[in-house]
Amino acid sequence: MTTHGAPRLVVGISGATGIAYGVKLLELARKAGVETHLIMTPAAQQTRAYETDLNARDLAAMADVAYRPADLGAAIASGSFRTAGMIVAPCSIRTLSAIAYANNDNLLTRAADVTLKERRRLVLLVRETPLTLSHLRAMTAVTESGGIVMPPVPAFYLHPRTVDDIVEHTAGRALDLLGVDVPGLPRWGDG
Image 1 (cartoon, rainbow, N blue to C red):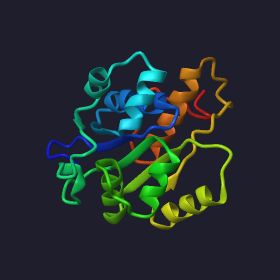
Image 2: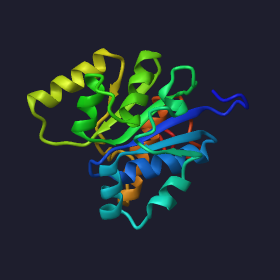
Image 3: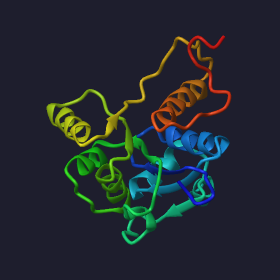
Image 4: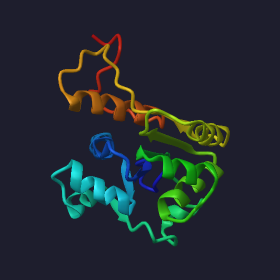
């Protein structure tokens, strides 16, 4: 938590397809009054250029604070920097594997390792299919360390009408796992 009471959330965006999930997380977190700290890998910047009309500066401006992936001295690299947790959306298999085996070669994986060591919630929206045994073992290792593997599988019970509806639901569910209540997010049984 910050000193002024707003929860802090670290958002990592790796190079897997599905950058819309990270963008939507930043939008929903802002709507919920959450302070966001963003790290994007170089591969995520490439994916951003392929999958969105946002430039790097526009996407960074969606967060309260944005960091360079090489900045291993950033506040979020320390356990003394208190947060509500971290979400990596999307999470590539490379990033999953680095987190699973504490290969902290950039700020995103270091922040994730800090999140786990401090026993805070770490949610990984792993984007890969089909899965190999190596992928599953890395998911098991992260889960055994306290992380939550949450592949962005669409839910159809709310009768989504657009791709954005599907993305918003998944991003909202990821925020739920960190105790962030997003106003107006549709839920089962609410109507």
